[in-house]
Image (cartoon, rainbow, N blue to C red):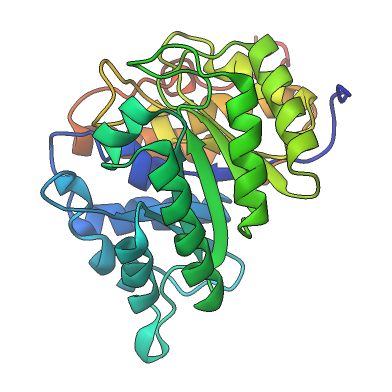
Length: 313
């Protein structure tokens, strides 16, 4: 059932991981830590901070452990590490050894098509299901929050439309494997609001009681509309990236995530609480632009916010 405006949405900030992984200019460890610290100061309480993947394939993430070791030890903040296989989970667990804080959540990934899965992770769907069951078990037994993202849920760059029935079935299997949160990711930015409402409705029926999260890319300009459709469909957790940075290295013509600033503006104007400070986010956007070496895609970074109040005389 659609929800009216109001309520609360949790925003997961993915800029330091998904936002940067496709960037050619290497961002230093110190600048990544500064970015994450500023985002926490702006109100972010769940953040993707690194991915435990092969650094030869994703060089930008080669310093993941160093970034994590330098993060502030905030009990009110949850740090997420992306993991694609059991080795990734073990690396995530190693960040917690010796009494260190480390990461708090294992962000597992299950790709919803064989073609993309083989290019992204070297796995078919069936192989991904088996691997994710083991990953979720290792995460849970090691004290990490076990959550999973179903990637390419709204469409595959090689196979086209992914059947909704398949997504619902995969979600049910991941719920059975112990995932406490399931995200549906529009990895290549092809989804539209009607599809969002339909797919999340099916997944809610297939995996009752599991928290649902939405991850949208703005490749075709529908990302913010899709985020609002997810909110209206009762999804209470949304991913976004500072400045709209991002893109999958293994998806053709992939572009950025929905912008955190743009999402916050929409939620603010719609009466939905989220806990982030828009002015602070815009300031971080402007601080980070010189490090990237180009303007960020975010609309709010260019236009600024708007309160609705009359302009001063």
